[in-house]
Image (cartoon, rainbow over all chains, first blue to last red; front, top):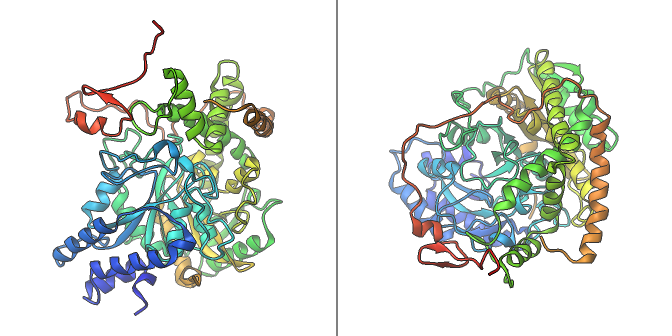
Length: 483
Length: 80
């Protein structure tokens, strides 16, 4: 058997069920791995070692009577998801010391399934960014090359898996924030259909786009995680009532006859040749497995990023109005209430958060609302229509996940526009509300490249089936960085 | 949000560049296209109109920077 920290969830489950290890042993292995690698990787904002040991011991005590595949499995969570009595900061100074009085629905579901919580993971402040450099606390490093970013905004969630600090994590994806870091860190991740997973207890960034999604080595593991976190939640009015299918049962390994669309608009100037080559090879693998490749067009693709950077900041400016230092979070001193609020928001929000609040309030202001916000919402309709038309012809769409491999720390830190373009292939899924899966498909210059598969609304089962079939034919998801 | 003059100038340049970029949207013909706010097509989701257990007051106040007598405490909202 591999060392415990190298195991996937599926492997760890088998080892637990065979009595070869215990939940406590697994938990100790990951805690030891975190202690060993964290000085370089810096993925965690908060460790819950004692709670993890207690949960693992409880899981071991219930052994035999447990039914969930996640029972006794250690996991870690992006720090934008509320965890009762465990600090939750959104990687922002404004929420330093904030301790949620309740659990997010996904945390309740994980705890009910017997999963073990290792800690909370770094990200871009309020999930705004594509490199995790916007964290107010620390720079998370890419385990494949410590000079490079892990991507973002769920950079801690991706780096923790790649560094084998946890077998899987939860992140959130508003414009690519689980898929892009998964691609840059050589792991797999799923952004479910909008509404598939409850957002209750997820601290809101852009409410019409946000989704919680799992990150892990293999697609089979993503299916196990989605099974537990998906489903209707009366506490989230936007959560979907559609029934949740058996995702693991959908992993038949068979893609014969599936029509996979290749959109010409996703092979643009700016996509690195090494990325394009790896992705083209992945298409060929799927074709060799019996899928049919079809060239398609998604004509409004180039308008997705500009429309996203109107809609997401607009929603963010409204959502972040609550941080005034009155009911929770940190308060800066001032002579008057207004001075307190101005200083609290001016000094404790980072630059990117303030940029987006200003863009958001600008595009929502009376004179610009129609020209920017309303127009962007109409473009959103056109983007949705692009996909509806494409999915009348094909079952899935395949693209690169990110136009580039992981870039150097600092390279795009003060160039917001260059950073925004990191999400050029991923924002469309959020705008259209459809599910997106990222799987590792090779290396360029020694760094991981990700394939992205997009599916119809609520077609996660088909998406996972195709991703799993690809992983049965390739071994990219088994490569581990030396660290 | 309070910002220094220097930072305002830096932001002005960056925000102008971003707004120039999103101006690409102005070139698209959206005549007759309905705007989308809710992508999965849900409309006005309601819940049953009955009282449910809420967060206890102590829990709701636990993260307050300043509190008194079970309330959030702030500086005076109005002058005199």
